[in-house]
Image (cartoon, rainbow, N blue to C red; front, side, top):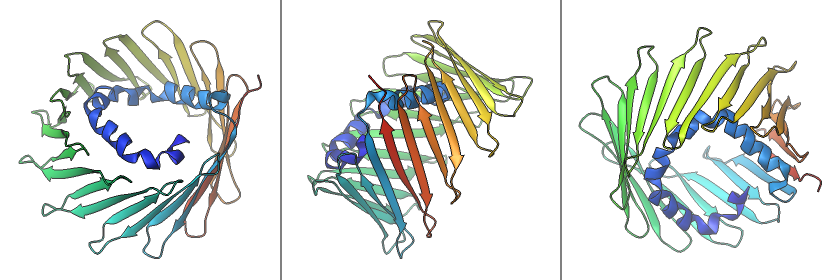
Length: 317
């Protein structure tokens, strides 16, 4: 929820994102780790890592069909996001932070048909993203930061037909992602970082049809063993490089929604209980290992947009 307060720092944050672009790719294996880590992180949020309070996002659809938003933080600060369609049909945005700082996002379609973007922060500094189609038909991009640093993403199709990627940061260091298809038909990948460190993501399909994952990186090997429970929901056992085991147990409730119980490597338990409101929107209650809770209440507007209110209660000390 700290994003609500971050609009005035947009340029700094975006500049940081540009600088760590290569590193982000190197850490892309984290997507495979989301089953266990997601629940653990969600649980940490609910245990009282943040002070209690309420945040909300109110959305509405403008006359041009673009969705606007008003975000209110736990301290009452408000950020507004005004989206609008320009003469070329692109959706631009004007973001006004809680202290009045204004950032803009301007999209444009280049002669190649691809959408470029310029993000200008409250101080007037800009980040530009220029997409272009290579000779192989794949979309590459060039990102120029507010201080002139340039990052590039170059995609290429290997002999096996899969798309590989090289990301080069402002300092010239590169991260490469090499995808290959295993004998089982699943796509594996090898990520080589700027200093030569390698991370290998190996996927395999079990007899029940579920895909397991083994991630081998500089710090060791992590395995994700998925299996389908009797209710049809997919559970996960994650074993870390040091032998620690965490589990994600999903269960389908009588309302058809999937609830989740996450048991961490240290034995702490986080539960996520989902429920459907009278308007059809899905709410959730997350209870952390120490008893702290996060209640997410969604509501559907007449224009089809969805509002959200998050109320956090820290664990008792």
